[in-house]
Image 1 (spheres, rainbow, N blue to C red):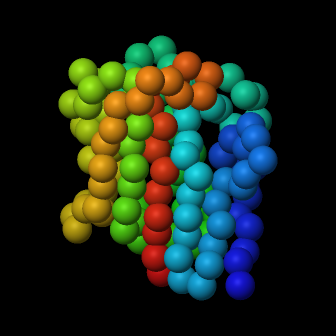
Image 2 (image 1 turned 45 degrees about the vertical axis):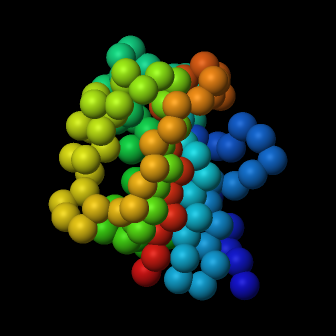
Length: 125
């Protein structure tokens, strides 16, 4: 059985999807970009600020499902350019204490709203 997870503390979906879907002990979080919840504005003054907002959005969704970054087992990071990898990695890494999740990072031709980073996650209780 699946449970839809949506919280006002993360941006509302901009298409036909949900912020996350929980199935049993597994949580599948849709890709998050640097939208500020409730405003639709982007927080993208620089790549560090942009990544910080993405991680805040992901955290809000994890919390809405009763989880945290310690529950994350897999992430996918999409970048507009691999030259941003080190900066994104620095911010991303600061949200995990140990036992980092599995991950891939890929450069893509374009992302929604022309952002530089989008991150999706899978978590488990």
